[in-house]
Image (cartoon, rainbow, N blue to C red):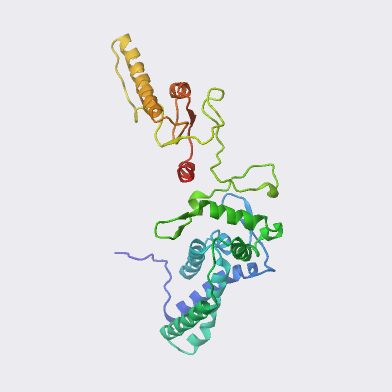
Length: 323
């Protein structure tokens, strides 16, 4: 029985350790020049053929395809830092690479790896004590204190040359989606609820934070449905407002001509009944993720209801959150 690939290369002992350190150092050297105020941008050609200019460690490393397990662990470290903190992705990789590199002289002196790791854990405890001693609480309602934190994060990025515009946008966007939980903690999910909408033709100074949801959608029946509604009652649907088509190949045998009219009437009655049930709730706007037939559109416009169809699920969730 063949368990492993016959061409697989197996390394053990000091050779494996040396190769792991070399791989980690190689990854950290890639993004070393992107750290600090004099950092340089990397030009990356992504999978779709587009060119990206960035000095963000995580953005660079996620485009790199590596096979070495130690190098993969370094890239995973950068991704975790980005998810947990959102900043310091470059610093954490360079620090990890340097720590591994500095352990090499001790390994050459035949000091056991577990002893070196134990020393690093002691250094971690000492570093945490120093961090605790120099840290101070920040009031999230103090805008100037929050702006200082955002500025330090954005200061090394390309957008720093645009002055206060980007820090203000970033802080306003986070404050817009932040919600207080019952236990007093803040729930901030910017990936799900904050969206960057790009519109061609404007300058970067035209950017602003909208305290609402913006979608590139028109009403289903322009002219018959209202476009401007203040303080609307909104109904969100994830089901179609049209008669469901048969799955796969559906055959209907009709022996009499009248049966065809009955079949069509059944479909029309179902749509009419669905629209009547929706109208009972007296919504001003109906938003559905699926389709909306012309007949449904007629009944809804007759009831004075504006309809939007084929809206993304993420946008539907944002409308629910905003409401």
